[in-house]
Length: 412
Ligand SMILES: [Ca+2]
Ligand SMILES: [Ca+2]
Image (cartoon, rainbow, N blue to C red; front, side):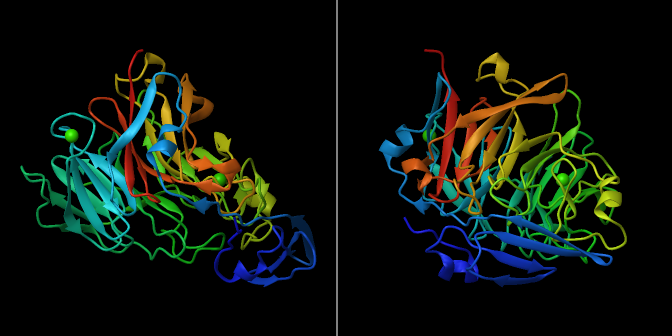
């Protein structure tokens, strides 16, 4: 397959490797050296470093029954189609009776129901149209929806249609590069809102970008809960400790193995480094803190708990609370990875499981793989939304083939 580059880079694609000179925000592209040179001014000195980067987009192929059959899961687990023909399904939320709402890139929100319990949704209908609808949450018979700049809620009626929408928040910053907002209610009943950065790496001018916000019912405006988070789409609370964890997306263009994706323990008032500090205290030399050195800035930031392969694009992050899966999965977490474009070989395009011990993350392993085929040059699925159903099965949305998969376990 051909390598496709983003935007203006497409003409470069005969060679897999190309150089970029970055001086602050100005990017010049040359074909002469197989490396990237990053220059950053620090006081009177100039720091020079080189990185090799790739743009590598596997080719999309059809999700045929044969390919789906070849998906790999641990022994005893099965994956099948719960719903299809959804275009680009993204984030899901489930009611206690097992009705599923899913946002779609078109702005539609669909209702999916498996009324005869055969593992397939025979009800698949649009219940809302809301431009930019992405993240969902359900609380007290209300469906909460976040668009790029607003959070709204609507009553879930008896027939599962959605009542008139009321605005909760209406002044979130524009999305820029990261418009995929998500929301969730914490164990403290407060609503948490992930607002990504509007760029790859830059000094944000709006204080709410690159943060996790928090709001409770008595407040009119959300407050900043944690900062320096580039784009933490997936976040959840550990079921025993109630500590909040989130998966942050690393910076692009720092090389195949940088920036690694981060699992952060997210605590109030903390700064998680972006855009100046990444990984375990590494300096992003393409962006310098305004009034301090990288070293000084890094002292004010919190390092991640765990790192994952760079550019694999973590989406949803959940803790498993159900009883369908074997006991050892209870309290473990699942992370969906959308898959890379800024790395060779490709990473992500899978679902991972993460075990915990004494409230700390222990070991991550592949759980569903095989969406990436032909030695990593083709794909038929890009995992996004991940929810647990009341029966303990998992649903996983794929925004490349319009499918929502159902993952089940049964003893052989
Ligand atoms: Ca059914
Ligand atoms: Ca960080």
